[in-house]
Length: 94
Image (cartoon, rainbow, N blue to C red; front, side, top):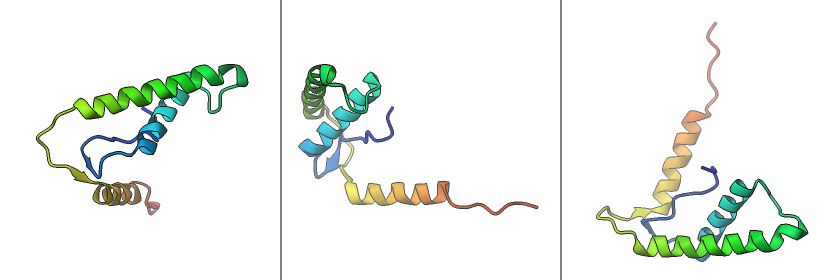
């Protein structure tokens, strides 16, 4: 999966239109291999983004869970702490 696509379900506040669209754009970029489509491929690229955005909205609306909603700020802080630990400079053993 593309690293820029983040989980969007079960967060408070809910995913915004911009977040859903950004995930759709990243998905289409990954699948197509295009960062930016050529003029010939702009139409199909845009239609794919719109279709995936709509499908994602439908999916998020229909999913059900008993888990409590996660807080975006807390999850972001946890991810930042994991990244800091993962990418921390290591001492070179002699």
